Amino acid sequence: FAALPIAGPPAAALSALTKEQIFFLRDLPKAELHAHLNGSIPLPVLQELARDYSAKDATSIDATITRLRSGVQLDALEDFFGLFPAIYALTSAREPLACATRGVLEHFLGGKQPQAAYLELRTTPKATVHMNRRGYLETVLDEIEKYSAEKVALIVSLDRTMDAATAREVVELAIDFKKGGRRVVAVDLCGNPMAGDMKTFKQYFEDAKKAGLGVTLHIAETETNSIDDTVTLLSCGPNRLGHATFLNEEAQRIVCERNICVEICLTSNLLCKTVKSLDDHHMHHYLRENHPVAICTDDILPFRNSLLGEYALLLAPKPHGLGFSEEEVRRIAVAGMNSRFGADKT
Ligand code: 6MZ
Figure 1: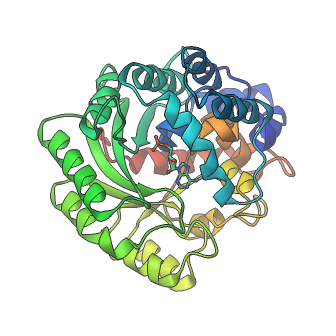
Figure 2: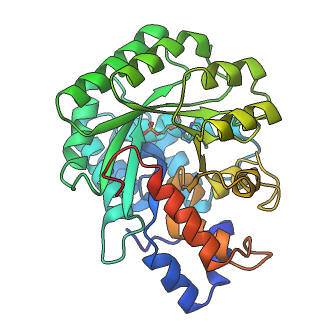
């Protein structure tokens, strides 16, 4: 699956590189720290799952797969979340979920020239008619742990639409799995950025930290996120932040002071129209401050990108990329590797 065709900005950036530059990027040790499991299923794997699936919602699944095949057009980030119900129908039982997880792991870590030297895969545990949340996490961890701890670990996501009891259950599960020696390294907050009151979640992130788990939070992903929401999330003491697109100056200052790594997803931001262009991207602020960022894919399934393609956006000459030097790109890759929750950083 490593050779899946990519499209759009990362494809244009890759085709603007010389062979030597592609080899440079390919051989650079890269950490993928922000990839959502159900958003990262390679399309052929999803199509295989759809073939084996027969149920009354098959029409909406066909429609979603057609949309994914022809390239998802989004007017805004909110449109994006509508893709997931159909994908979730296909991964709602243990065996298809295991198959999807294997496909994602194979995409990032398989083959002679893997996309990533290290992967932190994240997913939101779901309770379905076929399994409870514990069963969901066991299924994913069973696949993850077939690889060495130097290569991959799991981040357990909380969705902003969860009620307090579910959020607490998910954090308790993450803590329990960690205590039991399973490979859970952190908890995450994701989902529609406009949903939920984050004050109810704060306690659970603090519990996770006390238990030795890392905390990464999607923050200020849209312009409409309130300052109150941002202040609450920063007060949870995150170690890393996802996107952090619309932080005001004060919040940016706090992020830099506390040395909180920012997970950057260039193609995702362009396609969700939260960033106008690569030149306008908030990543530049952090790079100027010599602050750690991690270059990531977010969701290769809808965005049709790859980790190599995201790095190509850094190295490719303008207008296809940012025209960074190899040395600058190398430094960014090292910052990503150093921002891992898991694995021995030496
Ligand atoms: C916020 C996102 C996201 O957890 O079911 N997700 N949340 N912003 C994004 N930026 C585009 N991309 C993905 O993977 C899919 C889930 O990840 C979250 C959404 O909640 C989505 O439902 P899992 O494996």
